[in-house]
Length: 142
Image 1 (cartoon, rainbow, N blue to C red):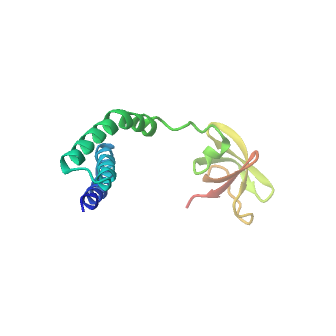
Image 2: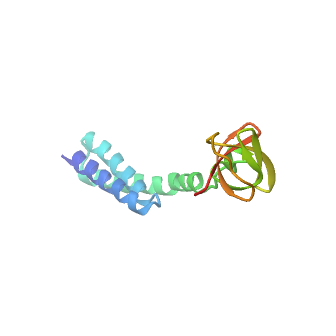
Image 3: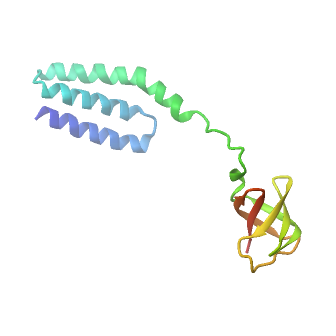
């Protein structure tokens, strides 16, 4: 019966972690799971509580800093042309079915319309929907 109580406590604490997001309740939930495992071994209640306190403290001091470092470090900077998808551009040369040019991220790119039947005049603002090699595939903003 004690293992079930510890397991329920671990589930409740893990659910609380979703609201907090600081890995605090998650470390205590891990301690409760450890105590549930110890409870299955048939140890007395005072020993279960001691296992819970000791394992929660160990998770808090050793695992939590590692998780913080991993999840709070900045993401990798994307320098590939794919990073330009979704950004705005200005048409500098009419985009016709045969091609055109846009100013994208401070540079001039060859461009074609996402819909080949649509021509986009110079001066219009467009959005990049794809990068196809050296050509920006764009669509006209409404």
